[in-house]
Length: 255
Image (cartoon, rainbow, N blue to C red):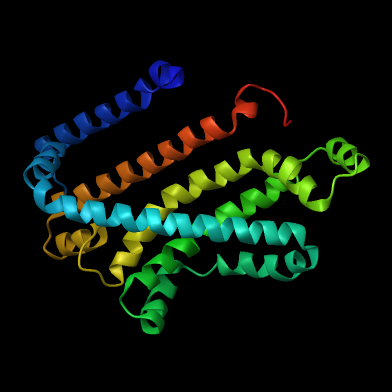
């Protein structure tokens, strides 16, 4: 909170300055509204079109949260499995890396062919977008445990499950939350991409209709809403991290 008060005003000030410059340049150069609308025009569209845009915003937020939860679960399960079973990690981890080299937008049409236009292909798109950062971050976190701590617990007679849940898992939490922060912002992008596959409502649908009708102001409304949703999701993860990883915030150690 103190950080937001002391330094949070700086990016806000920079954004305000950019918007002011944007407004001045557009007005002075008389750029057509369909090419680049002024910030005031975008704000007016947000206010006047809020009633019609709100259902799209809620739809995207809902599917982003659902996909993020599924992606988080899959990512953590995969990370734990790869960590606890070395031969699976050696066999599967290279394939996970290769899977990230295939653009989601390329896989999207295939998912529609295989699973139709329902909710499932959308959740799969978001899951594919979210799970990899969590998996990699968790695996890195499991490796951060000091050898002395692990040796001490083994000498005390701790089993493999005790070693994991009482030592490796707590030490991995900061890294896991780093992955969650990345995935939280990716989930909104994944939700919008999934809506391009075919949906009745959502920011992706709103953006597609706006761009096809050359309503650039609405396109910017969609872009701003994606940014705000991503920031909100990020803030929720940061708040959860501060609450759950208290030992790190206090500079302490795992008990």
